Length: 438
Image (tube, rainbow, N blue to C red; front, side):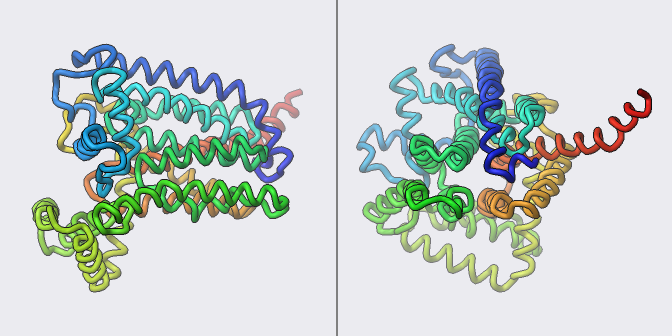
């Protein structure tokens, strides 16, 4: 991993990673595309529009309907007159575009293999920079290719796959700008972050995290100005969505999801853990209670009630959040985790809990190793974990799909760590043994 900690070596790893990145992209496009075509044809879907005779739940999580509602509103009333209280406009716009091009919103699933290809290239390149090793980059590509659950999410009619794939591409472009310092890379990184934020509000706080990797202390005034512009670009989508919600609904929030999850998911979950009731009925009563309420009043009440309940049980709340994070980290990252879906994938086509926990232990050890040598990158990785898992920890019964961006960024770290350990073992045992034999 020495190449990571030297600007010369870190940047010098890029040219050798380009062929592997291109190969990774082609391989991912072929495999994810083949899976999409096979899975769709096996269920009688049309070859181009992917319109299927079966229920849409076969390909989506339960929240697909809320994205579809926003898409219908955009089509009927225009982009400026739709409501974005529950969903940001990116994915609904993709559904509208897919319907225009293919005749069905299901055509948006074709974007999955394309996004997976870009993510594979990004992962290969990031690993090359981190380790300076072509072997580590190749290992990261292998991990991505055999991360079975990724195929399920890339073929799904929902945001999880596109959002995660896009986020790792945005990180790679941001790091590319740090390495190369070219204005075009900063522009691409800013556009990538705007696209990611338009899909889901999870990374609306990314501007708090990116200074760790966009500001280089020894850089000049011009580079710092570009870094500031890159950070400012990450605020555009949150600002526009918040302004739209304020203008249309009188509530200055980017999304209702945060307070909904706190009051109607995290609170009922903690109540069940405290023996005060059963989660699902309490969740349903909570959602029904707030349905149709004025948005500003709803946000205020949800926030106040959740905060008061958590303040009464601070240690139990912390344990609940920690337990949910641990549970989601070990959950198979597969579409069939939600009870509203048909189990149409075999059990082997997932990454099991034992493998996942070993993966996270390796990622934690590698992150600690990086932190002791380059704190800026270690803090970024820890911040990325928090940015993904803290919002996810307020949900319940979602499986592991919310943590998908974390899986993807951890792959380069784990691949680099495994290569480093293999190199140490080779130098410590294999090479001396060969020397004695010769």
